[in-house]
Length: 114
Length: 114
Image (cartoon, rainbow over all chains, first blue to last red; front, side, top):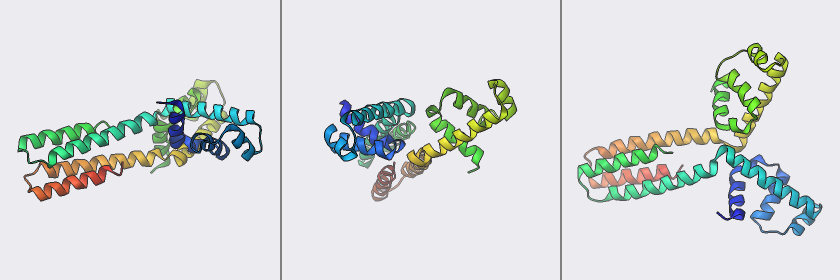
């Protein structure tokens, strides 16, 4: 995953753990695509200070994810939802009872991975 | 939920965000049921210092959950898993095609809440 995109997703997941100031700066930089200079002007601070905050927050977000692993969990659940949908479409078809029971058991197995 | 039980669950979810020392003390107190005096002895520290760490960590865990809401999310997913299992048992039965499609649509709706 491209780093900029990764940080933007982690910001969605863990943003609430940052302070409001940190969250705003990260949001300006990663979601609204403002430059360091533009953000510095908005915050009445230096370009270097803005850069330091962004770097520190990037590290914080990566650190939270290495500890809680919510990104991987969200990706896994998203895949599980797709897998269940595929199985449900199979169930829709006119199938015999044994095939039906196999698919039901498959879905149970898929759910057990949530 | 009883507070002691709540903190023990939050410790499972957010424990990695604590330091090792904090995690150990919380684990001794909430999961292994050691007394403040016993924990203080193990850590070569005062009873008051142990108490302060426990209180601070309790606050931290509650604060993490108020921001990330993972406990409620886990409870919701657990309920969703149960609901899908119930629907799958209905599907197992010898039902007509319309009933089958209704149940499949019900499961899709349930999954959309994950």
